[in-house]
Amino acid sequence: MPTGDFALVGANIFMLTIQIEKEQLLDALLRMPQRELEQFVAKAFTLKARERTSALSEREAELLFKINKGLPSATQRRLNELIDKRRAETISAKELRELKKLTDQIEKADAKRLELLTELARLRNVPLRKLIKQLGLKPVPHD
Image 1: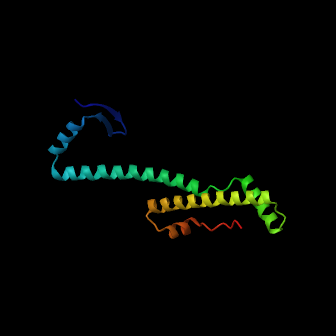
Image 2: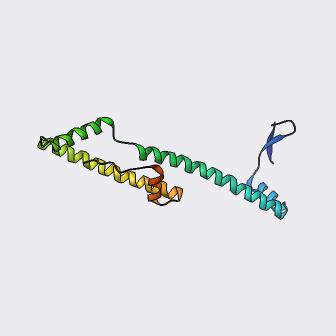
Image 3: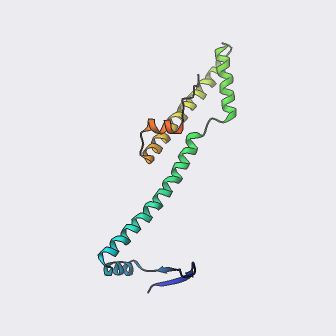
């Protein structure tokens, strides 16, 4: 047996919230005139599509956050110091190993960033190059 609540929304508008079993809903749908049933189904698909779009928007926001996340400032400073030392030819063997390790980490992060960009392009149904242009992304020289 369906149960429900009424709420006054406006002067002459009421909102009904009911709980109904799936079988009862199917029986009600089968009794609907064809045109009314088609309108109901179209509305249901529209609502589900809107719900899915919200989920995609959340995923897009998450992807954009990760894509735009740069190096920690301390790491960037150290990278710059090591690059400057290498250019000045004053870098030690230990510092050169540290620079190589940082460079490897950056390359892995860049590869992950490309994966995230590819996923975002797929979600937005646009080519990767177009997405990169839309986002105004430019290659970052790491020397």
